[in-house]
Length: 334
Ligand SMILES: [Zn+2]
Image (tube, rainbow, N blue to C red; front, top):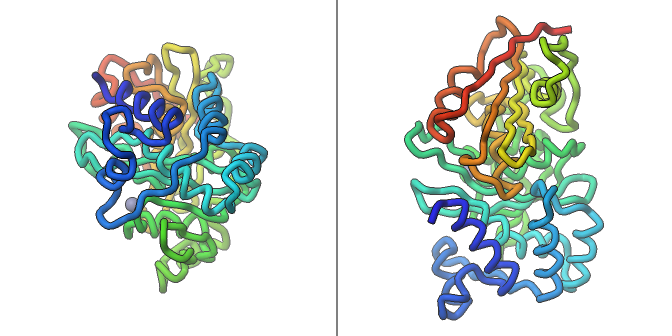
């Protein structure tokens, strides 16, 4: 069984029974405890009505890892609980998307945008490649909110306290440190209390962080009539690259015909930046697809910029979809 089938089965079990391994005959509380970070209590199992709503949502053909504000309200009422508590309960669903073949440590994250919609995220590890290309759960959830055009993020729930790398990444998404960090059975904390004396956009002379999503016009590439090229161009125009000014975007087409966009997301500390292929892979996995479905990939980036995503995109693509060529299109700033 491949990783996609594992993930899909985990998701089906979750939405059907509220536990990912319930069918194996174990008590659900024992199983959840086994699969959670040590010492963490399992979240309450979602009610059948809530699981039905989620089942319909995540298995719809256009699901993209977002739960719209209206559905969040319905779920919150169905669970008779607050939105922050609902976010904690949704972590088990987010974890079913985790691709962690190296660590087998499955992370789930759920962030709430200012619109009221919530966005799932999970960790992604790329086999046969540098660990530096891993995507952490918090990065996935926040990039998901970004790719949906949110104006900002108010809170993020995580299956375990965020690592230092993620605290730095979050600081770019909430430079004032206002975002609430929600971890089960602990009082909510502001990022500013988890990351005191933060280094961020202000230190490099910028007033704002990644949100709200902004557009930077780029010249049209050759063959702009190609839908995949247009998607990569659009992703590049929405990239957040204030430090290198090297905007880039990726578009991935799968055999189902769907197209997933990924914008480059930069960080003041450079290393926690997400490449456009990483943000596109988050979208692809949250839609329920897997690397084997990738049929075409396009990278659009600024010509002769200070940095390029071409080599790393090609290297990672070679690991996860070796028969798929990468088409790189340099464009001028307009
Ligand atoms: Zn992390």
